[in-house]
Length: 549
Image 1 (cartoon, rainbow, N blue to C red):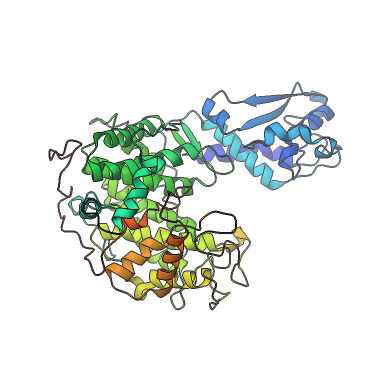
Image 2: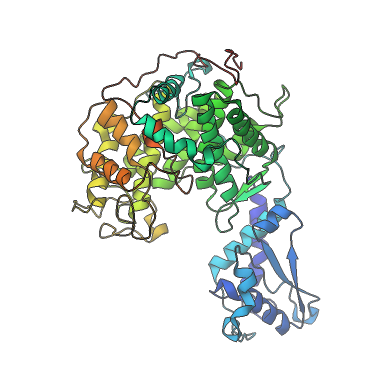
């Protein structure tokens, strides 16, 4: 969400009086989310005031359960302006006062307890309430501008250098998938059998959205977007493989629905929502635009509406402040995808430079060059693995654009995969406690020892599969480049044995379906012969060679 800085400062100033423990202004806070409503009632009672619960009229905001609790009709002699503001999501609201007297401790005027985390959440809520009705049109970009970076290898110099389609799949990649499926070649044949029957690959898939507002952290209402973005991408691939117009219709309908209705993305984990679901969404759009001749709903020469507008304002502009480690790499991956779709030379070069040179989020910030240790190997294994995968998906987009970063740092990404695979398959590895992510203190780091949490490959103790990360690295190095990747190969085999190729992952963290989308025969060239900006080939739902220019 693009919030003017003044709104945030205003929210802080508004709440500041509540943090003073004097006779004129009180703020009662507890560490227990479930006691919010009960505590608010008690605080208002002490002020001789009744409590009001304000639910924003916007239905999308109500869906993410942002509520304000305030005291009404305050006794002016006590000098109070507001006794309590709270913001929370999920089921805590309905459970608040069901926990009895224990959830509502006695409060005294002289004993004001402040939990700053709750105050900060309240600040976020006040800022959100002030701008919740803002739409994309006319809203200034808080995260900008992006400064040009031109002096790096692989940088784009002009628009005509972009290859389309050119995110995870070039025209040649799509043709390789399609031809091998139709020729019953393995592993494409078996992978397609599972892919084509998956719920998200069906042309009659029922959309879960769209919504006007999406939120991730601390509120959560984005699962509909997760499902729909996956369905759009899988139907886009199904259309290309089968040329069934029903899949064309399903993919483009989803893209248009979200592109026409989404107005805001908010929350503390916006970057992950934008980066992960957004990448699936952009990859679906890239296929349908350049191979399927899709013209987005609302597109016009004056601008102002449609999928691309949302992609620019709500996705790309919210990704340019890059975080750390896996979180930062998710943004880099997303920015590369968004930049190619938008033909944004400056944005693409900015993201490429971050991949190569950002000391906190780039390839060298995530992987120790000598050993391959991950910057979050001491935190837990799922975050460490995701950083590798997102770096690989980013490398794939860069490859599609004609530049090879797989060999960067003497095959550093492979080195990182080998380290992670060896450890997660139950073996000992060296661990350097001095190599850790930037701002590790945010996630209880740095860490003295390598983490056991989420350790494993394939089926885990909780009955779920580990992250689907091994295929892209195995095929890029072990097959296409004929590199030795023994531990990565073993990890892939274990993941496949445990059913990793049978269904889509349960979230948007990883696309899955590696045997279908990343496969190469050993030694097969990864270079595309498609030098035109649209890639060529049979384009359009009726395969009549139409080109969307």
